[in-house]
Each structure stands twice: as structure tokens, then as C-alpha cells.
Image 1: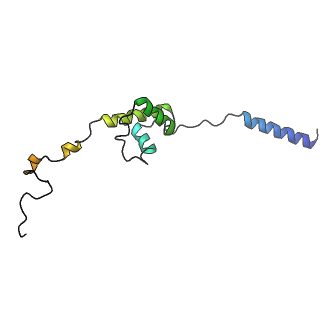
Image 2 (image 1 turned 45 degrees about the horizontal axis):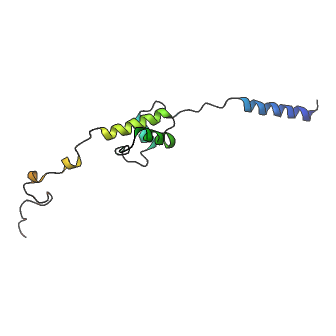
Image 3 (image 1 turned 90 degrees about the horizontal axis):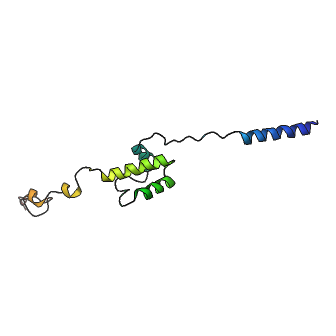
Length: 122
């Protein structure tokens, strides 16, 4: 066999070996992460808070959107979906209406930012 033919044979064997070996298994970087961590890693860059992101959306449509655009697998997409829905349904601190003082607590019907008495010396 000539050196040229043996070189080609060796090259052909090398190419076949490369093509037939299995590729390295892809590693799922989201596997085992809790949903708040997934949100922090994937969504917090654009969204300051998870509150309101699931409002008015069906679970399935939210899941499909997250699966297509943000999650690396279906488990992560379901975890994010559940997390976003739980944040919206959870009772957080006082509502905005409850946080404002009522006119009866300020002593007058005017703004709470105005002093109740005139400022002396004016």
C-alpha cells in the first residue's frame, strides 16, 4: 500500500471516529434551582419585581411563553409560572389605599402634607 493511500485511509478512519462518537451531554444549568433564583438569573435584568408579571394571564399561555423564551426546560418553565402566579396572589404588605392616611386620621379634610395650624410669623 502506498503512503498516500494509507494516509487517506487513516484520515477516513479519523473522520468516521469523530462522526460516530457521541457529543458531550449538554448540562442543564437551571436544574434544581428554586423559582426565585430562576427569576433572579433570567428575568431580573429587565424586571425589577416579579409582582404583576402573571396578572391577567392564563397559566398555560404564561408557561408556553416562558418555555419558549426564558426557561431551559419544561420543569423550569412550570416553576417560574407557579412562582409568578404565587407572587401576584400572595398578600404582600399593605395596599396603596391602606397606606395613605385617611382624612379622619389627619385631623382635617385637607392634605396630610400641610401643617394643621398656620405657621407663625407669616
